[in-house]
Length: 222
Image (tube, rainbow, N blue to C red; front, side, top):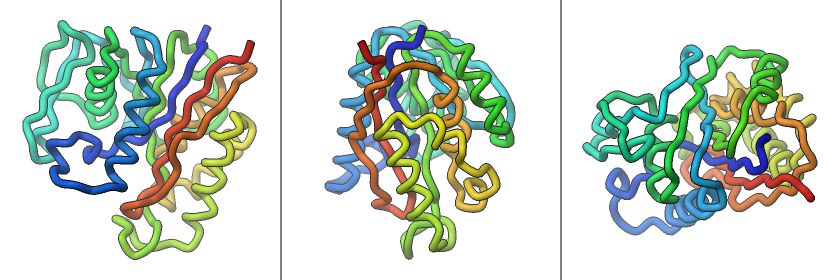
């Protein structure tokens, strides 16, 4: 049974070597992510989005070389290898920050419909790390072109995460999420499939670099 779940974004800029120099907004985001994952236990299951379904075992490792710096991370102390997709790289980096033993990464296809996401959530066990970004179309700094629908979309996500509102997460429109560049839709809807009486805490929600980032902790109620 899943007793804890943490929601974080997965931009490469979380890694200090990839974004050197003082940046208060980035520091606040990074600190929130690390504080959140430190509330998980020693063994994690991570869920992210990718082009196709994939399970990455804890014995794996990789590097952020493709993002500009050869920062190596492992999914466990014995992890080996050099190639991991971004969600797995960030999961590995966060594992190391938290001092956790291991993380298995479940990547889910970006086209997976809400009902199938929820079904997967029902099958998961262990402490859960959910990796996903909000819309990348916030304001003039947005990596995608600005879209006036982005703030309302991410406000709805933040509210759902703050209230452990699984119905609201499952109601997110896949077409709208895709149009807004929100890669977190699938992982959030996997989380929504995990039944339980949750106590939720939203640690961070903002779009400092034109992308919506949310950090939340869900713990099963007594």
